[in-house]
Length: 129
Image (cartoon, rainbow, N blue to C red):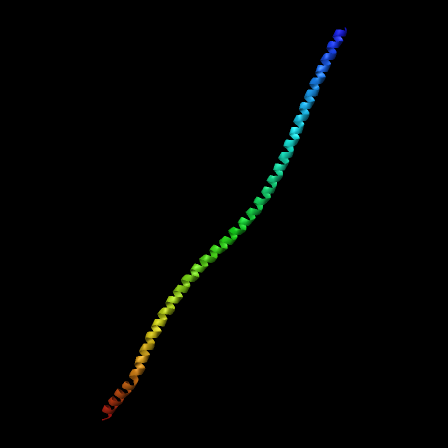
């Protein structure tokens, strides 16, 4: 009977040692899981911060897109204005040339005026005579 009790006691001790080993293994796993969970929380925090940075960057990009569109619109308007200015400049040059030619004609006529007056006086004198 002592042998039976001794065998049972040895079995219980072996079972208890087994349970202690399993508990130690479970505690190690639990500790590993805690470290992994902490690492994941840190990673999630990093990701959340990066998402905030990306959101801010997207807002800046949208603002830059608006600014770029405005610059493009202004550039197109400047091209139209430049074309209009060239057309106006060409028109002004045309009229300037015409005015200079007209001024030359007027100057010729004014220079010929005394001669024309003498001729008219001679014609009138001839008509009266």
